[in-house]
Length: 292
Figure 1 (cartoon, rainbow, N blue to C red):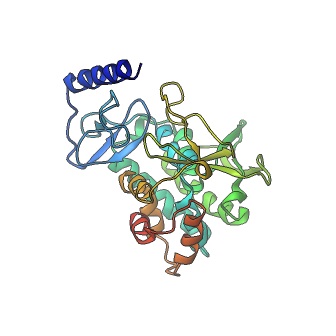
Figure 2: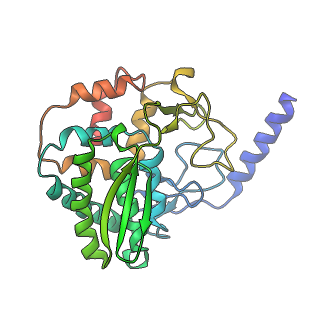
Figure 3: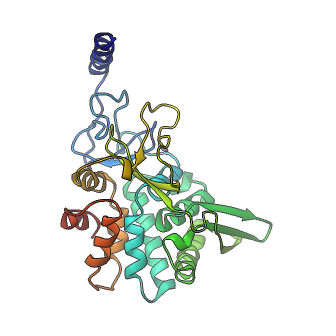
């Protein structure tokens, strides 16, 4: 049985190696049409499932990314470490800060070749909110207004703070995207006091944070195709350089957000607490350098 399995894997690898290679990106900016991940890479090879993934990352210069919905994966499923840092260092001028973050977000979309004229304005705004907050977001729409409902925001943010930040950003996005509806923010708590799950996939080396804590979950990025199940971090061992790698090859939207905040207060102690929650006791400097 084991020999048959090895032979099958060798056949798969041989077939993958015979397929056309991907195109290099002059900017090192790539995306995957299947798993909807975005990467900063030196070559068009999947950094997580190298040698096994049938897809090649797509150079943004060769084919522009699709809907901004794909970017929501950062906020929905990736570790909420950058959002927690933002919640710590944003201490004043909330509306003005929100506007600046919206400007940075649109500049980021432009650099990654998203054509805003082809994007749905509502989707673009929803993606901004999810990326910034790390919260799942619902919409309540009527003839006069659009209300974005943030779920379990208090797991990461002070509600009053994040509401002012988002509204400052929405005021700018509304003018740029020509939206006539009044834009509002509301909140709902789904998880309550229950713990959010933190997971690691031993096969691809990715970390995830989402939903109610479980021992094992289905891959949130490749639910119908992935053969491996991420496990809660209490159930597995891993090296801290895996977390460093994930932030290094993920587009730098959070580094841009964090770098724009004027508050230079040292938050290394807070970062240490956050990383301890991920069973990471070293590589703090390396992780910090990917975010600041």
